Length: 77
Image 1 (spheres, rainbow, N blue to C red):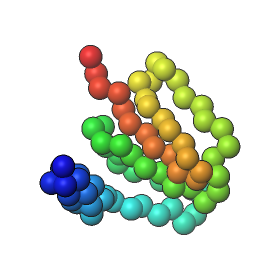
Image 2: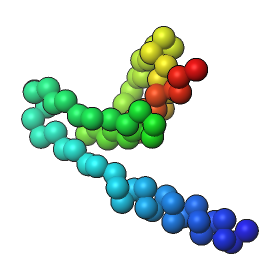
Image 3: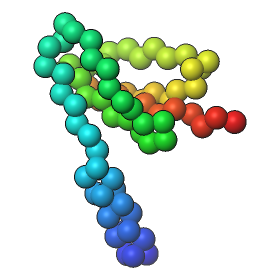
């Protein structure tokens, strides 16, 4: 059981090491970024997210927590 916990911890740490942080300084301009189609994308905003709007037709899984938004594309069937 401890080996499974250790393997899970190492996987989580290694995946966060390869994460790309993009900081947008000027909020008045548009910036295009690349996001993953296979992994969960994490967005951090300067203020709390109050509402969440998404569409089932877009096949997105969106979860918010405080000022963080997690977005994952649903697999194609």
